[in-house]
Amino acid sequence: MDHFLSKNWEKYQSEPLKNFLDKVKSEFETYKIFLPIEKLGYYERFLQKSYLYEYQTYEGIEKTLLGLEKRIGYKVPLAKAIEDLKSNTEELEKIFFVFLDEIQAHINNQTN
Image (cartoon, rainbow, N blue to C red):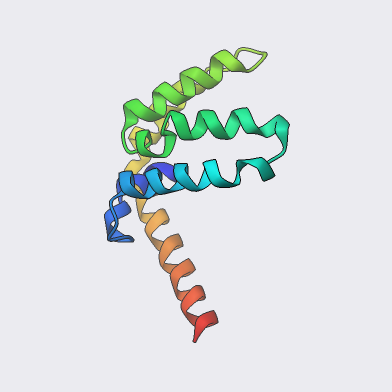
């Protein structure tokens, strides 16, 4: 889902993804004192590496999966999942658009 969100960001937001992520980083710095200390490193790494921005491309996702493979304690070929994503992108993206349309309709119904 992150891949399709970052790839299609401009369909849902007028603010560029990079600008949005810069604001998130700034807010994180303000409020990180409220995060559990054991999770702080994860959040800092997530923001520093700009994972959501990198998820726009297959290469960015693959890089993330390879890094995750190295961090987990047992060998799982996570990066091979990129081939499934590539071969099913069209169908998955259609599902993503339906899902986001449903979320937006629900939110609109709740606020009206």
